[in-house]
Amino acid sequence: MKASPNRATRWLWFGIVACLVVAAWAGVLFRWGLVQGSLPGNLSFSHLRHAHSHLMYLGWLVPALFLVMTRGLQEERAQAGLDTALRRALEGWTWASLLTGALTFPAFLAWGYGPVSVGARHLPMAAMLSGLCVFAWYGFAWAWWRAQQGTARTHALRLWNLSLWMLALSSTGGWAQMGMNLRNIQHPFWSRATIHIFLDILALGFFMLAAIGTVIAMSQRRGRGWPTPRLPGEAAFSGALTMVAVAVPFTFLLGMRPEQLPGSGRVLGALAGLASAAALLGLTRHLGQLSALPLAIRVLAGGLFVGLGLAGLPWVLETVHAWELRLLWLHWVFLGVLTPATLWIAQEQGWARWPHAARATVGTAFVLLLSLVPMTGLWPASLRGPWVSVMALVAALLPALVLSRVGLDALQALSSRSEPSPQVGGPKG
Ligand code: HEM
Image 1: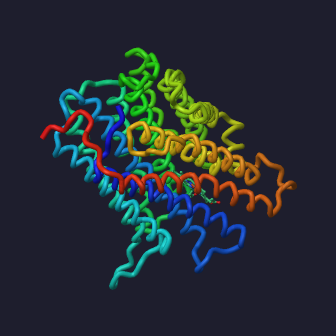
Image 2 (image 1 turned 45 degrees about the vertical axis):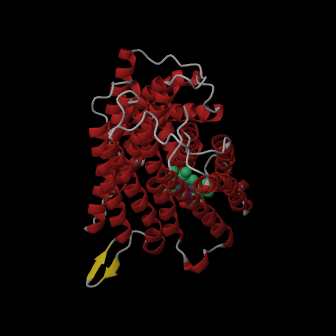
Image 3 (image 1 turned 180 degrees about the vertical axis):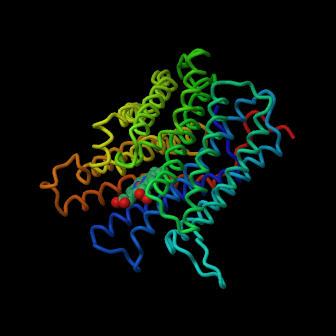
């Protein structure tokens, strides 16, 4: 059954989508600046890049997944209901995470990671706001911990719980990075490792598991008219979950330059990539039968897991770094898989009403990914030219326009009248 979001939650969804739209246009502005040779108003390219990526993570994906997880938990507890105070706490922390995440955008745009003079002090304002946002994540995890007690330990609930442990673990990388910035420490290994501990565990551990858990929960709900996929049995599921929990924390090693790692580090990274890929494929294999989930998302997700499994192999790791595939990889994960999957979930849960949001996003993401290929070593340098930047600009415009349509839809939903049954499963107060 689709939710009928009340007015407050429609505002929350609108705020989350607004971050997605602003961040997407910031990406277009970056591409436009590259074509022109400079950005308007003396903006810095590196500040704009940080503003874009932080808004995408902190303002869009994290609060969006908090919102759909909360809805998922409400549905899992359809019989017992979710205590009103705890539901409000979950929504409150999602708001806090959204607002602090949104504030990082102007801060990174203006100052990047640099210090700002406040009286006699020099404060790294943007990094401090990101830190505040992480406190909101802890608040959400704490409220979740209390809210999920007494819920049947379904596959979905166990995935959600593990995803929040991963979120907490990834934040240690963020704190370490901030500590090193504050003390002005530049370390060849740890400066890079802390970034990857934060980003890679966040991507594969939190975003991916939270999304898979929600899709599994939805696929098991009766009354959607979907064929219910046969999920892995208890032993296979527990095995895959344990493998993810042990292996994902070490995937940051794949983000390190091969020459920065001793032989044992490279072997560990390769094993972590292989084990994470096998476990994620195991967890999602059955969702392949879920014909309602757009095929393009399933194909890109499958390709991503295969790529992750291969990434640690000797020749592959060198090539990934030498060919500068990072940007392509990041947008494959976030724009090709996680963003359309989250929009699809949101549409199924009733937040988003435009029925083509996920398909249009994944379609235009595919064009954007293709436009990035000539910027990598996959494309011969002799065949590059100014057309590469122009093509990347045009390709960036397509998903930005589609996401703006999603934003317009969220804006229109604000003015439509509230539906009568605001909470699925009926809140218990
Ligand atoms: C309309 C969609 C998008 C456009 C047009 C876009 C564009 C861009 C551009 C132009 C860059 C900088 C490239 C460079 O350094 O040469 C970038 C970097 C990045 N983007 Fe996106 N992007 C989009 C969607 C996303 C999404 C959905 C996410 C994550 C949820 C994301 C995360 C990132 C990250 C993490 C970086 C790298 C930042 C760094 O290296 O510090 N992007 N994007």
